[in-house]
Amino acid sequence: MAENRNLKPGDELPPFRGQISLQQMIRYESWHTERNIHNDPEIAREIGLPTPIPRAVMLSSFIYRMLQNTFGSHWLVRSKLSLNFLKPVNPGETITARGQVSEKNENASGHSYVVAVQVERENKELAAAGKAYVDVGP
Amino acid sequence: MEQKTWQDAEIGEDLGSVVQVMSHEEINRYTESLDDADPWYREGSPWGGPIAPPLILVNEYIRLFKKKYHGGAWSGSLHSKMEFETIRPPLAGAVITTTGKIADKYLKRGRWSLVIETSSRDETGEEIVKSKMTLTFVR
Image (tube, rainbow over all chains, first blue to last red; front, side, top):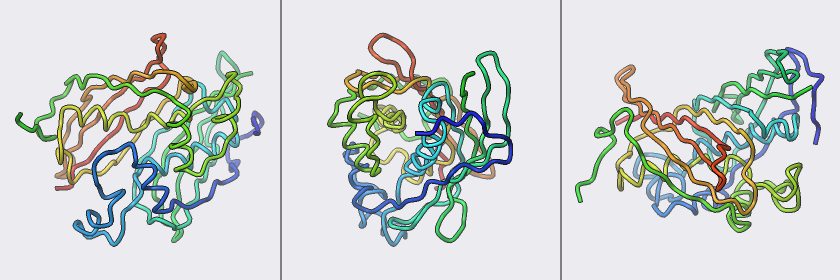
């Protein structure tokens, strides 16, 4: 994994792209004992959804993986992700996590980055957007 | 027992604690559901042995809330915001205790929101993850 310390504001991170299938959603929800709009087509239909939708936090895992691919273990120490969830996504659609460095700051332990992050739907709508803070050390 | 609904939630209310063991089975269940084959979760990591993805703890706020607010207590809610801070990843085998409270409850543009704050610690008491999750009620 890359541990990139040489980024500058404006740089784009390599995107992370993938899908969330209905089977993945059901497995993700297996900790959950209740039927809900994330694991049961019937419950989803009751509130007008044609199909179950992935839990919003599943989108954050795409951003996590994009940041981990770029910053390696630094992303997993004293990091922070702030996200607003804007639109649900459908199972099976291609979604893309993107990031662009907005700040590079010096601090006592080296330097840190602020990265503007988002999850984009197949139709280019934003499903989630926010900021990530990562400390990359000396 | 009377079933509480989210309308009963009060700012500052303690939600108690929940425990999750970072077993290999649990890590596999989580990573397979996200199609994540990173060897750090199975073989070894910069922390020595395997770790769990920090986001494995992202749904602990739900478990905390549901301990007090049963059944459809949050029917009609959307997860609108998340703040998730990783201090370090949970190690495989660790026993993680998460505590939480209702940090805020507010009305904005005709919709109520609840903010649930959590703190997750390993068996040594070291804090490893913190979160602040906002649920917005649309009906």
